[in-house]
Length: 110
Figure 1 (cartoon, rainbow, N blue to C red):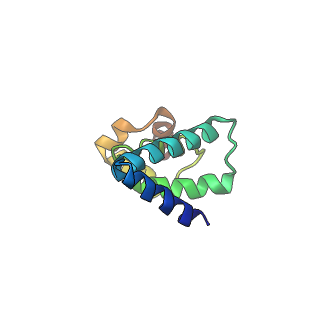
Figure 2 (figure 1 turned 90 degrees about the vertical axis):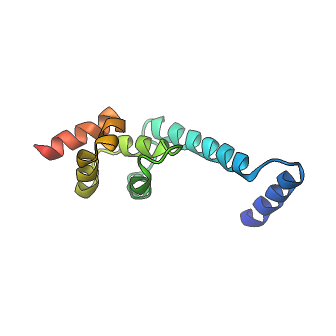
């Protein structure tokens, strides 16, 4: 069971004096890199999975340290209208949005 194994590893890291914050940052960086690799690898993410990823990424766009959310949105050919409206009306989000996402905002506005 994966959860049991991860608890054992976290316990060991605690004993070694490695902070949980450090472990979480390292894990997030590793998982983000893997997701980016899959998004960049000729669209190896199934369309239904990409749709689920978009719904999970949308609430965290703009959160520091979770820039991978923008990569998920940029990989999509379409985004929900409410999300595009939120990006269009929030200057900080619009400024941070990748070009592919801005293009979708422009198309939605026309």
